[in-house]
Image 1 (cartoon, rainbow, N blue to C red):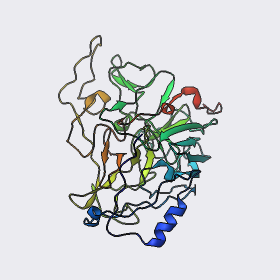
Image 2: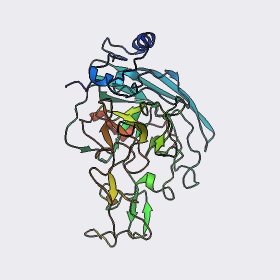
Image 3: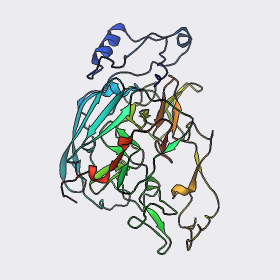
Image 4: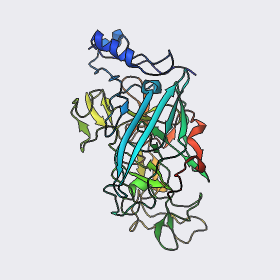
Length: 378
């Protein structure tokens, strides 16, 4: 595989002492750990681009910690992480565990799927989860490439019977699952969970159905105990209401939101903000997806389609289409940033994260359902 584009740095060099500290802190088990910084070229010296934040994240206890590192190489996150969190609904205390290891070509993430924040609070429907959040007694291991190659073809992560299909692994050990198991039932004119199967006509977008799908304040919920995210959140990076963010060490670094995880192809997933070279400001990345208009057509063999008066456009996956150039991001919610690094972004509207990948997804992101074992709790 070819190496990704080199990082560009600003003319404002980090102090030599900081550079040496960053190089020494690049944890891992291989001599090929990524450099923390490199000398700027004459081209970058002529710009006012802020220095890309490559300060390593702290390892160990990351309970409620916001990340800082924007290094696109997964090896920059090698180490062991833990968190002690509360299940607000059940009154249970859980300890999360994530370890990241790497070699010259890949990184592996081993996790029990417990996040770094409390779960079950402020649910969108006011109801409790349908199952109890539980750690994975087996742990599962996900692998990503260190030097992913971007292609021109989007590859979608599709649901498979008997499998857990994941759109990413976040740096708190929780997987991102953009898929939907909720669908429209034309007999009852409602959105249901059980009985959808793999070939429903109208799959409900979980994060776009807060009154019908019970997720907590992090757009997460468990299925048979497996806590996972269906949309964006503020668990690992800061998020404010406005589209433009004033740079501040306490909110968002001038270079943008940190890497919060990795997609199945090995490209990073960033938080919401990027540095806009045109406006010289931090902006929330905007997706390039739009909704169809008008009433929905009745699919062949179906009795009816969900009415837009009861289910507004945007409720279902099939309502959305990619509208090239309408936002900052491409079809898979990604872009190349001001530092020459391609990655995917969290967004507050559909598709919320990497719906697809432009690199080759690793097979480990499709796990047999048995890979998650709740120890008989549910």
